[in-house]
Image (cartoon, rainbow, N blue to C red; front, side):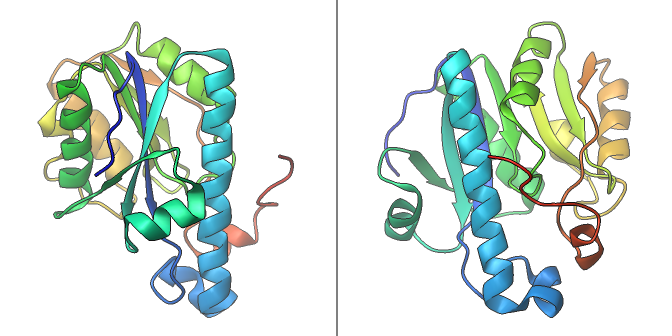
Length: 210
């Protein structure tokens, strides 16, 4: 969509254009259409801020993979200097695998995918993730709801994204199970909280510091 050339270390951010009524729908009953969209907007901007902090201390490229909106809307929101790609069709697993294959085909050697639902994800954790990828086939950041907020690989492994019950509390456990069957070495990051449901909002301050 717009050209970028990944470095050896490459990071992919999965997000959604913050259109009211179509974003963070499980939070709409509490925050309203606009409030839920604004939260999505804030969390995406916070994630990109942390990735840019990471770039100050290590050589890493990144791209934004998005759903909703279009390229013009994404550029108006986040700027013209970022690499953007549509996530494309299929379930979450198919979209993640596609983005990984694309990055590795363009000569990246360590690729990490993150979402934008985890305000506690910071540049230090991302640094640790890339460090772990030097020693492990797979790096996972477990989310407290049973999913994961980060996955990193040294090469694309399609089995990790097939037959996973996306959106359930079994995502992390099932992914680990598949990885163990494949005899992959796994590095683990600290568990963090996602902000997906109304009860998640009650547990913490979203942006304690910037």
